[in-house]
Image (tube, rainbow, N blue to C red):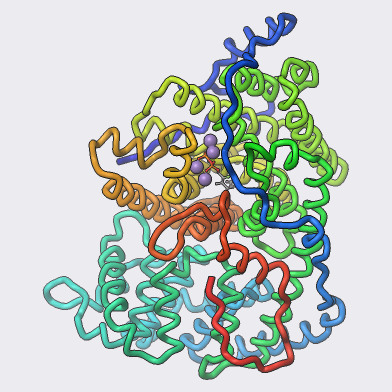
Length: 600
Ligand code: 0FV
Ligand code: MN
Ligand code: MN
Ligand code: MN
Ligand code: MN
């Protein structure tokens, strides 16, 4: 199915806010003016409709625990040591004369979570490698060819999947002898996840390597065995860098030829990042507690501040994006409670009023809202104005129109779905996706990222709206599909609109298993389109990386072992362990610890 999404709100980037586009499925401007002109009449919402609850558990995080997160691994204390280690690693990267060893080192820098410290050097080395077509090893060794392909694509170089043709036999399939080369198979498996649409050789490579790796993994050396299992669970390209770093640091300790400077640097960097996470977490959790909305809405909405921070830090993942991470955390916590209001608690009449108030963006409109909505509206209003003020003061940019417009679009999408639910309507999959790529919230996240990092990430230019319009729906689907795979069963039990899986079951008359496979297939296709923008788009790489990270955090949140479940709304022990590892437990740098595989 070719999904063509429309992007209705991008006029917020245009100079004249009246040039607002409206799209089928959204409330028209005329309809909203009608609401506005009626503003003196009493609100029409009904107070007699019984309220539903999301039946969500309270937060698993204690406020005092979050406030107590202060690491004693002071960043300044290790600054000189970190500098020295960085120099060591830079030398290593320069002095290594084989391209393969250089690539393996770069791969380790990625997996250990320290690539940010060597961006310029990595770029230079990969550029040189991209120009070299003469290296025999790079043509004949499956591990080398695959690693080169993966790293170059990830960094935006154009490289053809034809490099894998040499590994096929005369019948057109991959040579069966390759299955003995476990390292090569594993690298090909990882490379296959950088596929673009239409690259069937990479689909074949994924099928071929998955099957064979599944068969052989029992009989290999324990560290390689662990790596294969880890990769088959979630491929590297779909993994969050920070979780991977925490896991890989344990693996790297046991790696043959491990470099102790690099290991020490990885641990110190991990601890430094943890310290900045802790500062941000303390600050946003104070903000959330002071608002009091978690408590006020505890009977029906998700109080998920730490989880929201995890998402924010995952999406805007570069270490210097701290302020952006905090603003995005607020956005996600707002998205979560407002989504719960629209999905379960509010009546359609109330939701119309809320949508109208957000569209008007003034305090008069707030007066018409039911009491429980007023605090939420004012908190949102204040939060956006506060962020807007900070950016205006510091950079002279007014990001408020952009942020309020994205909220209007999200509320309109939520309202469309609330009406579907109240009418018992099941849309077609395409119709559902037209609305639900917005209602899932990625759009909000990305617009906050754009607002916060605009100047150095995506300089305001007249064609930015055009450039960005293709990737936003992809970003929506990067979250929508895993979210539906993980949580739609519970959502429907709770009383919610049919999601992609159920829409497809209804439309195609298929079983849930078939529909799930179909949605998983669409998720893979979405990845291919996002991969294409890694190598083709004129958008800043850091912005595309946020989209990639959205897909990663969504998949890692909802995928559990062989199935899916709700790691955001209903976090369990796996999530708790993850968050503690990232936010609360510094790594021991001096002690040589025994092998302790961190399972995420
Ligand atoms: C969506 O909730 C949600 F809260 C997510 C995806 C975690 C936070 C991330 C973002 C805001 C992107 P839910 O599954 O209830 O959303 P829908 O749209 O299905 O109601
Ligand atoms: Mn929801
Ligand atoms: Mn919803
Ligand atoms: Mn959902
Ligand atoms: Mn969900």
